[in-house]
Amino acid sequence: MTELKRIFCLMALVLTAAGCSCSGTEEPFVAPCERTDAPTGCGASCTGAGAETCAAGLYCGASGECQADCAAGADSRCPSAGQYCTPDGQCLDTPGSDGSTDGRNPNVCADVVVEAARVTPTVILVIDQSSSMTEDFGGAGSRWDVLKDFLLATPDGLIASLEDQVEFGLALYSAESRDGGSGGPPIGECPRLTQVSPGPNNYDAIRTVYRPADVIEDTPTGDAVDAILDSILGAPDPDPDPTILIVATDGEPDRCEELDPQNGQGEAIAAVERGFGSGIRTFMISVGNDVSRGHMQDMANAGVGLGAGGSADYWVAGDDASLRRALEEIVGGVLSCDITLNGVIEDTADACTGTVRLNGRALTCDDADGWEATGPSSIRLLGAACTELTTTRGAVLEASFPCDIVLI
Image (cartoon, rainbow, N blue to C red; front, side, top):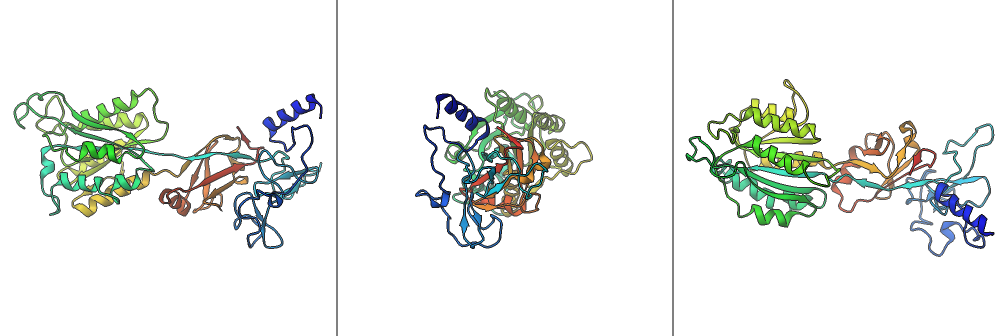
């Protein structure tokens, strides 16, 4: 092979993933399952003509065993000229000049394997630190202690059980009035915020701050949410993954300009509207029954971009069990099954020609328990597949799309 030919071959590998050797001599073709480093699963028993019963890169042959004629990817050669390598390792003839094909991707280019990454949500727990949180909570203890104990419980508490899937942060908020709860200007800073920046595996950092914390006095919810948004939106490298706030409060809001009486409803609603306008959703939990349903509904609507008259979900927790369910339901709904692709599907109508595997099992496109394309660079797992992704530690997701519809 001349030097010029070797250069052109290297260019072909980069641009088309063509299966050629760029060494001085052509390497002899050896099917993947016949190599010394054969893929795991070669020779395994299987049923059916598809790849559903075989590992990634293998298909179920006529002999009832998993096999591969070729290796999709950079080394995608087939033994015969004019063939192309499919994602499940089959060498198939390219279509003739009349455009006839066997129903598979007719492009001779090898499949491009697209790296997929599950979206990791950021969840900031915004905790009302007002003095009314010391009131009894269904006989299980004070509102403050029941909420804290659940969030910090191990190993089944909310943070400990999900810290490897969710980037948790914490913001305790309150204020102290100069007249001891009778109104007037605040003492010192308002709102008084104690924050732990969100991050992966953040249980220990949150516990260190939250465990010794105690209640203060007032409930400047709108001021607190605005201050939290300022810290998020002012970060030099904003997190591209979704961020949500979970506000757990037991009373009507007041505001730093007037800590008593509780006239901060409009300011609180405006703050969560601002958050939604910046891509940050807010979910509301009433710890106890002292927050009016009207205000909870207004806050819930504003938190997800619905106007007056909307019916967004909010949660009223009156005891330990209902509080747990409320928090788990919110965070469970935020664990994302939206997958970002390292590439672009030029025409999402052709997305189903791709292959998506979860823990080695092929998922069905446009199926209630499979997956769907949601945009040129994203797919979404649905139903049982979504549940498996969000509840299985160490879940492995693979996505590959024919190179005629994917551009890296």
